[in-house]
Image 1 (cartoon, rainbow, N blue to C red):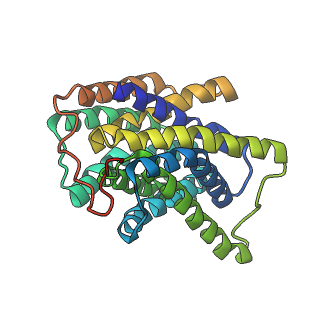
Image 2: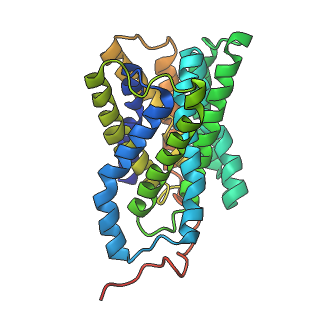
Length: 308
């Protein structure tokens, strides 16, 4: 059941490419808008969880959420920018290299080692990603900056996922994601404020106001509230590398959506690549130990307290 819910979350994340391509709002502002809406949509659940667990936001908790909020803002902004600066094949290949970075971040921060099924599944899945992207990858100085921005986005996403795995001791996913979304929006707005006087923000909102509002609303509701929140939830119940591999299905779903929405034909190797990614996911999902170690216990300040 956890796997099926995660697949739905990954599909929800994949819809972001549709709304991003429809939107003409500046990447930094678009990031801020979707994060603010995502946090506001989930705020009632946060308040209910806060009352249920008698949770208080102390200094220790703030220190926990600052890194993932920063990594999430960095990932969102750099992904939108990078996707507009380099060919789609380059952006897709680089940003889907998260399973390459995750073993290092998981071991460095959590001492979580890959299992044999995860190594095999990663091999299958990444073979599919490389097969899809390498034939159309453009190695050129013209796209070097865009490729670097996409690499930064990939690294930010890997660190964001690792932080979510590390913070699974927080009693409720809502107590975690809502502060992270809202703080990430503050980081995005701060970045916009810093670069705005120098022409770094093209527009606060695109020319077609109605379309932009619909795109922003959809980005906040579907890939943020449903997509990222479910992925954060799954990291509490599944190993980090397993979630990273299943998350590769984003490019599968994005390719299917692009075909129906934009009438874009998939790449020649799309079917084979998709089958390899699915095979990799099946290998890691079928492993005997879905989670390596029990989550660390909550701190004394934020421990679950029974209601009286």
